[in-house]
Image 1 (cartoon, rainbow, N blue to C red):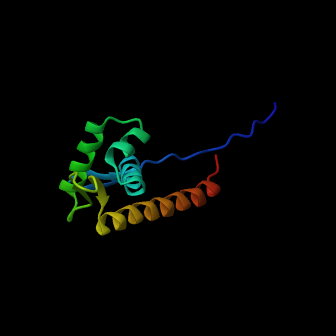
Image 2 (image 1 turned 90 degrees about the vertical axis):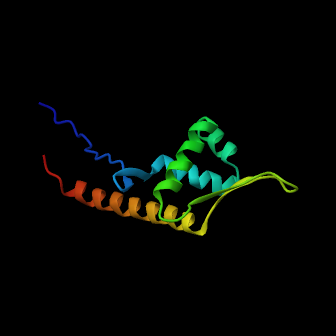
Length: 116
């Protein structure tokens, strides 16, 4: 009988919660990163193929669940409006990304030790 070499994978989804409510996950962090890159919620939502309303709801939930504002919306004017990620928001993004990388590295090491 021929032995088939199969690759074992572990797939995980990381969520940060605030008072038992979802605060930050991969999609929310991607939305924040896109806003930071473009300065626009509309462009960030479009880039993720998400409705503006859905993206706005996500931002509202993030800000409500964060200890300090993560996102600030500026209304139009002479220079136009936009959405910005606060200093605390940038720190939250970095914290999530760094933590996710550490978890992925841990899982990778543990997979190498698996024996079936």
